[in-house]
Image 1 (tube, rainbow, N blue to C red):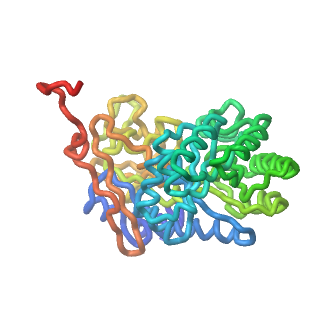
Image 2: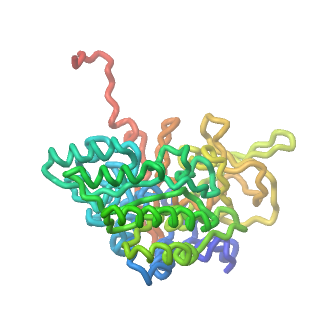
Length: 426
């Protein structure tokens, strides 16, 4: 047995396995492209978080945006987790999966009136409010519904998380949260509004963070504000520090362990005595998934080589959107190596998975696995070029289960209505 990328994805006699299942067997039964997740990988990472924060009252709220498949959500619900949601659709999924509303926190800068009302009626643990206007609208809606809404204020600590600018969310120029100098006024307003219960403070500085040191500055600023508010008689129940721990995308990457985060932030939060909430997403599910794709064509243009696969940027957007690196390995090892661009069938130059990448010399019909695709893979997928979205599979030891069927063309066009030869609805 040879580790391919992690202990859950390995080669046995030259064949790539997920747990005890060869990936080629899944491809031949389910087709490609297909997302494949390891149940054990998810649970092992969750165990790391639980152990790391076991000495302090902590609620782990999984960030649904990373991967929102109902089977994944049900698995995490059975493990006792809460949810971090950012839309009405994610609230719907969470409730459908059986999560208690009292374990759901709701962030996002643009919650609609309908979304806010649904979450008020559900009785969620907390809205992570991102503007003064949102506070006022939430208060008005709660009043109309005859309810009180639990709110936390999301502060913007202006901390550089040292990650990609598109996923840095705690800087002053970001659209997220309320700036530190304006935050006390937001808490005072929330305290006065009669249809709100002020319960917490929230910050989230970014995603794919490979150095935990920025968390220290962010949490210290948060705790400093908590003490300032206490002096004014404003008492809170919890501190939510968000998520953002990075994962292994390159073989040489050494992402931080959840224990490093706990050792950094728990002593600071402990000074307040408030309950702690953390919101891991990518770090729970990212390394637990791969995107498996089949080689359609090989193409040579002089000394430039292309491997064209049946997955596209509609299946995995991260390389096109962030120029993100994903390690790519064959389902069956080859002796010879080549340097090639690994590209998809979409009519966009940005439809690539790797450029000038050294890889095994695969042939037409072989399979390639895009590693660390469990987070922000399927959840960002689209039907661009009228391409059906991929199937999803969960592996559990020697067994695997299809947890999302592959879309059909009929599935794609079903919601569409033709206006030709129809009377106007005006």
